[in-house]
Length: 411
Image (cartoon, rainbow, N blue to C red):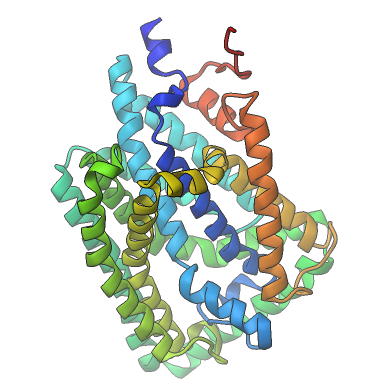
């Protein structure tokens, strides 16, 4: 009975609702970023803003590029690292093996990610989280200060590797560069034909092909980078600054003061290099710009977290931000739900609207869908303990079916 109590749903009074708020806001930011790649070939990642964007579409694309892209998957990753600290403590307190339970949890997440790639979208990050999560479990023995140091080093090393590529590209043999450019261009052309007009089978093949040609290579950078952010998040939670934000406002102001300047600096340098590149994803300036933006993404994300926590620590701020907390509690369900909705709206086996909407229309759609998700979350969680995917993930993690319905309180 003690094990079941320890591993049951966290009582409302013990939840860190600010984490649910941060997760809900990160969910919106990730959606605003991801929707572009339901309307544009993934072979163009790194080439900046769409070349045909003008007027309001350009303004919205620029704002998303500067203030959203790269900042919110890092926020999600910080929260994943924070959540690991809480979950591993609860597992250990229950008397179960942290390693055994957490490996099952990551195996389930990896499976969700693979299904996401095949059935919905090749830009999945869940399987990346699963691989990095296993490494996080191994490195949990590090003292918090070393988690911070290793995390920052890993992130900086991967961003530096990106910048190094920008320096190498001009010295690549011309025929090799031409072949790679042609391969990207052909892949983009094929994707632009299949996604808007293909049936389900053809789109599945295209998704798998896109992941095989782009995703596997990307994981060599993304897994260490995500692990680095996980470790920074683990350090943040180990310091217990989030448990009572109002009592630690000084820490959060200091984090904001330390993280915002480098975030703004590298973001500004990226914009100085450029925001759109006609030569595509292998343009040296485009790779340089992307690398600089990535370098600034983690400090900007930390600044966002600090600012939101400071707002949350006031009564008015907590009331305003608390609206999105239920969506944060159902983040896995909504992340996959966003991909499901987009696949049905933009791919050929659905409405086939791929490429028909500019960035302004896409972003309006994001805001509308997210508002609906927030409303659904409030209703769903008033009757259920977990979101559908959270419930399934918990079942696979612990090997027994959790309670589904919320038991009404006695009068």
